[in-house]
Amino acid sequence: MTARIIDGKALAHSLRTQYRERVAQLKTQGVAPGLAVILVGDNPASKVYVGNKVKACEECGVASFHHSLPAEAGEADVLALIARLNADPTVHGILVQLPLPPHIDVRRVLEAIAVDKDVDGFHLYNVGGLVVGNTIFPPCTPYGVQLLLETTGIDVAGKNAVIVGASNIVGKPMALMLLQKEATVTICHAKTRDLAQHTILADILIAAAGKPGLIVPQMVKQGAIVIDVGINRLPDNRIVGDVDFDGVKEKASWITPVPGGVGPMTVTMLIENTLKSAELRLGTGQGIGHQGWDSVTLP
Ligand code: GUN
Image (tube, rainbow, N blue to C red; front, top):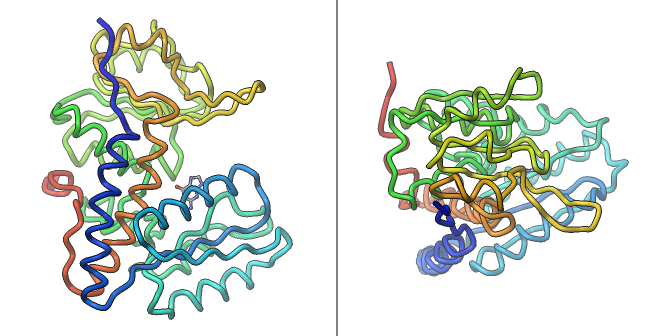
């Protein structure tokens, strides 16, 4: 069996087309949605990601306010900028690109963002919302994965979902979202012994470890859905995921490619959250939301 491709690029394109209409609707009501992006320092990968976010804003008609601070900027400078953006009514979303330089306390910075502008979903308030199944802004990468899974038409309730990678940005929130949808969730990480023993049981396997070629066919159950969150640049400059795509596609039932899978969805969900923020401000919240995902309250 050769897996069917879950086409993130196509889904992202279709959503962004819908977002242009939502932006137009907001503008007729006097609201021009705006996203502020803060980049501290000159990490080349971060520059590319921020560039993609600004481009996506342009594509959807969302105003973007790009703030670049030098690597030597102090924590107080970042906090002062966030305070200004929190108070700015033209800004509906604030994103601080991670990682921050080591002299800046990332938690203090994330906690300074107004919770109703926290479109990355990294503030403790939004993380807590995720824990109880009632988040306003789901973190963008797992949110994008949710929508990609929905396109397969397969109900995740009761399925074994195995996530490889326990980061705050992807692995942990992904686990909470899948648990909310009643999957049986396992999180594997760098200290997990015999990774394959866990992954082989996965009906849904999500690779988010940042290690090229980590997931090989022998680790994958026949017919599994495989989602590759990895974005790794090889020495020859090729971009690959964490999954041996050519091998694993012969065992999986569905698989995301890299590039063209999760990546375009991450940026798209940032626009979704920004529009949701603007609509909530107006009292007309109508996001595609996370239908179904928030509807189940586990005891
Ligand atoms: N760095 C890597 N991924 C992300 C993300 O989703 N949001 C932010 N702010 N920084 C990141």
